[in-house]
Picture 1 (spheres, rainbow, N blue to C red):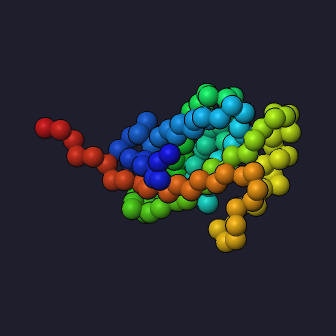
Picture 2 (spheres, rainbow, N blue to C red):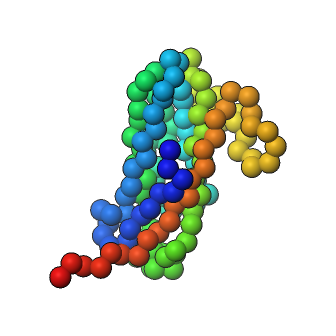
Length: 128
């Protein structure tokens, strides 16, 4: 999995990036994506189930105005991806709501946690 998401600032279309999560296991996995800046990013889907040996594509969109983008160049937002075994998809939201996302202490049993940083990159120079 990537350790960093990069979002360019040149156009609205490039303020999007995607994250692909793969389930290499023989059991279904449920995941939830959380961010330290939920008002600034739209993550879709932010909660879903991935069947065995399948993958899910998540879109991450920076939602703020161009002023926010200018002020945030080089800034970092943090994301965490939580994953759990999902034998009952109907109870996935409840199961993930019980997961604590602390950095300290041992990981919770049956919970996988991945951390990412999102960087807002300056616009690329136009080709001449």
